[in-house]
Length: 383
Ligand code: GLA
Image (cartoon, rainbow, N blue to C red; front, side, top):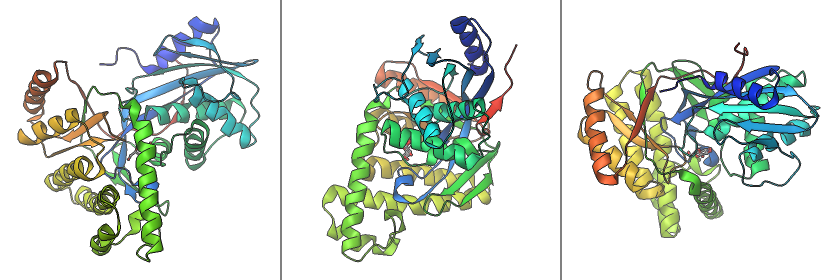
């Protein structure tokens, strides 16, 4: 349970660190992706929603760059022009360089950050940080950013400056999210549709930090690109990988070596699942949506090979005890499972799942729930 909001924590950290009050504050949400995993860098559709866990960044102009984080009690200077060091401040540096590249004049700032988005858990904590930092730093230099520009700056900072070959799901949902809606985002065309979705989603953390997911994500992306080159060369594919028509999947699989054929099968079947899931949401068909989520998990486990034992056991146990659906969300190789549970049976299903998880892995399960939350925004500084 959150005892103090990230905004309050960031503000008191700022005051304690710099002995002065911040000038501006912003916050941005974490997210779960309901369905559409590993499609954003393949030009396919995704269906994320923001969660009620947020990262707050508070700031004041300064000579030079300073950052403090409540997460690791670190506070100190950082150099935005230095090469990435593997520290969390790389993301701040990436934002500063991106803003400077876009002509935003930034001399320096004191920053303090606090968050209740779990880190390395597949819930887009890095996008929450870059979005909140970009919001606050742009405004510090007098710029107002629209949602699309904000998402693009956060994406550029993570993808091009920090060097993680992510797609745009996390930055786009964090910048555009609306309360009680999920976002159908067609990454191939940029089209977005907000679908009313008023249900709580349960998040069960696998306890496996997905830090190795960065290397694995880059590797999967390279596999998908190699498959797309082959299929384009053979005249089977005209656009991005996700545009391969399902009725050409059989032919494509014959042309590709085994792991690549499985990756393409995931991309093509997952693309169909996102559209089917959006239709279920619009029809209020929770049972149908749940079945699609479960199929999505099986595809990650079998074809994309991005799951882990903890996620597989959680999904299996949740489904066994009556969840509508459950699946690993985010990049994978650890992280978190999301579940849709029938109203009135949540406690019982979670209790049974907790017992199973704790017996199997010898550690406590962290689980919480959220309804769809709102986008990155400037905040009033609390007293
Ligand atoms: C990470 C990336 C996203 C997306 C997911 C997998 O979260 O940041 O862009 O590729 O993995 O769906």
